[in-house]
Image (tube, rainbow, N blue to C red; front, top):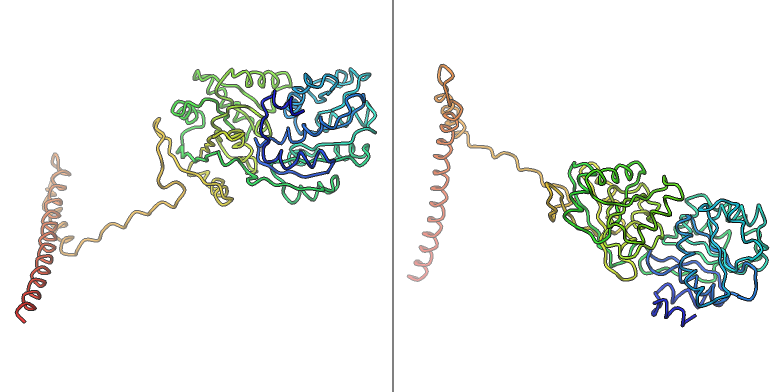
Length: 447
């Protein structure tokens, strides 16, 4: 295993791997909370593969993932080990394929099963595809998302077929309601929380006031200025994602579109294009914000913020992975300030920019209350009286050409006279002060 990891380029374990792998190798059940991009997947894959009896043709471990894209990603990571362990067999079961295709290969059972809860329940429970009495380990990956998507009934059904397995739970967030729900499945021998449970410290957060420019034009301007190496543009609504991608296409800005509205074949193609670096701009819904490992994302752009602000941290976590630096940009205007304020209250440190007329500038004010303009200075009664007289004198019996300018000239003449008086008064006060000081000094010397 150590030789395989070295050849695969994994030389130093991450914090979560250092904490979790020894416990997992001892068969302990555990809960692990760590920020995205911290190496959670290999924290459970390494001990699972290490403990497999590769001479036993029975399922020995199950990994449950909330989406078919995440399940596919875990499968690809695990498949890398097959060239080092020739007898190691694994299968991916998800809605990527029809049930009939999933059932193929029944006579040669895999030792590791990876899939989505609904499909695995259909195959393992309803259709009794394989005997599960040798399953010793089960993993719940992105557990908070499994709960949010309502998969816990399917998970309960699968657990009901297992005999007290080692259970490993991994998530970027572990709120109290999730912990309470998980107690039905796992009595954790060990719990671990990373130092930063939101996003990596290498991610910088920025707020951009786009005024009331439309989403499409604002995004196009920003991309032109920023010119990111690889960026993901997130929007909360599928309709907004589709509209943004269309706008970019109509304006000759290449982009890859990814959302839950795509069919399985289109989603697979989009992921292949993303991993083949076909384009530097990905426009996506929040389905791409959870757990997906897309290398070298330099910038994440949130056109809007999600209703559940936890998803902001998942979005931002697509960059700054594995110690690399990254930037998360949030568009807002005067009508959408409330959610950024909530993120600030949660401890996110933003700096501020404005985007206007194709220029991105630092904003020294940001979301701070704008200073109210001072009230118009009240003029002395004598000056007001002279201005009224000047206005009256400038007003002829009939409307004449340039009468407004003549009236303004007369008013300015009065104001200039009073400004001159004010300057003279100030000069006189300064001189009086100097004379008094000189007099005091002279008197002191005489004494």
